[in-house]
Image (cartoon, rainbow, N blue to C red; front, side):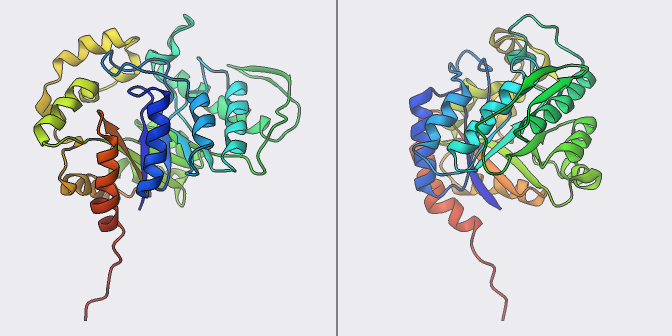
Length: 323
């Protein structure tokens, strides 16, 4: 299993994200995820730098592959703009960029006052957007008059040698089936073997499956839980709330329903490497090919050191035949 590092644009400013990318590479992480948000989930997270600026900056100080986790090329950003941004990112990274896409959340996509579509409409928009992006990556002039998007006599001139892969995020059955059909890979942030199985059985066999989780490093598990609850208690919200709530203020209100103990099973808490290894093992057993670890709080250097010395060597330990 490939172990990567997840850069959370919701929690860290540009300088911190650059330093984390460099620290992750030094520690032996093999790839990067980076989130694409207009808003943080909670006021306490406090940041939201523009992901395409960050990818450009990171590409100049770090050689790890980068995947957006994930971009919504549907409402806030027109697919033609995403196509250009992703093509430039692929050039800057020497072809080591993957465009992760999804149908988005109202939190980020409502900012121009557009209505928030139903899930079925969002998936249809995503499928058409991916078609537009791939057509623009051919380097030809594109004219597209579709149900959701129009492109008039557009051509991308700065292109990588090979077009980037597109990985599609999905949680429900329809989204997973779409990911299997149109994606080069699948993104999901829960260690759910049934979701991976559905992706494989509906057209995703042989394609990469990426997952991710959050780790709160602190000197004690109690302090780690405090940090996790302060910064990321929104992770405990059920159902479709993450897709439909429109602002950090609303997430603050809803997350009062989340209690600290509700986060213990979904986060890797504290300095004990066994907690982190157990989380990675869940994704491994669920069939994931790659898993990305997001740090919570100020101790990212300590987290990287823990993974370099005590986590990744045990994940990668070769299996020896018994005598």
